Length: 212
Image (cartoon, rainbow, N blue to C red; front, side, top):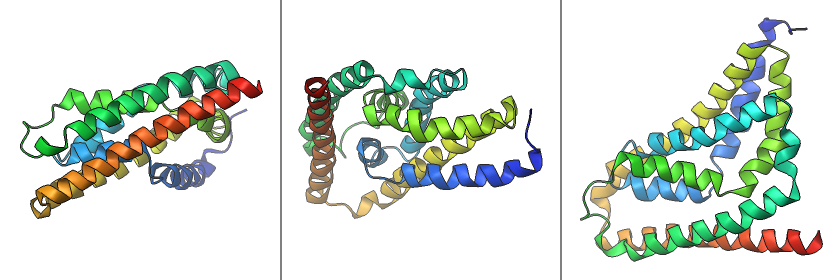
């Protein structure tokens, strides 16, 4: 039975609030939006596109009742270990690129899209979120039919899109205020964030494997 669609705007408002809270949490995606935004003002939008390429299949799988797959210890351990190594590698490359960051040729669009896709797929807590909070939203959206699920997905993604685009746009517009030293410090901090999350993912994956 499809719920009264007059309640859909209220439901989408709750999706917006929950999603925006998650989007604004500092993390690897935010760090890359800052560094790529120093070279391309729409980098955040492109990162959100890559993020959505992972998110859409996840929403569809949950819609068809496979949320438990993302709660599997095997999946969480594998994503944690592999994803952690990927983030550490990306952090190392970002740190190494610090001296020439602003003098380098403009970052290519496919680089930001790939970064959004990679960072999302490498994050085990992204899948945990969708297996718990996200699954609740999808189940609630099903009461409004397929259109409700689509509206929920679009609303959630637009929160990521808007926030990441805002970050990259602000960074790009203010980059003339950045000295080379500031640039190096910002890139260094963002590289440390990637490496830190990568290490955390690996430790969490090992802990889960040992405890299991």
